[in-house]
Length: 73
Image (cartoon, rainbow, N blue to C red; front, side, top):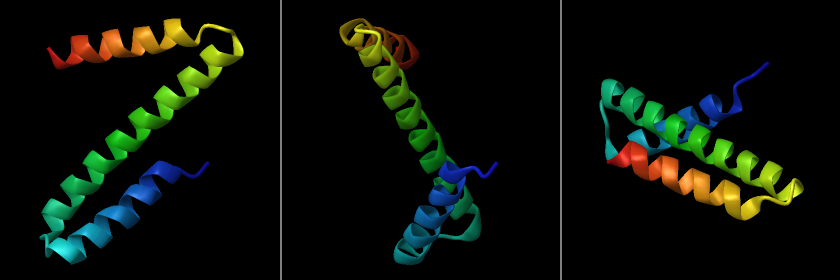
């Protein structure tokens, strides 16, 4: 199975690297960061969709916000 978020992150990272004139090492770090953000957003969207299908959208959104706040602090 192909990892589409990784491929998309590589494309975005390369493009940013060319625009910002990043070194190869920095481009790898930026690509990794973009991949983390994309994976997190994808998970959140899937959780919200499942919550919506189950009629628990507010509870799911509340849980995501609370756990995100706990990770930050």
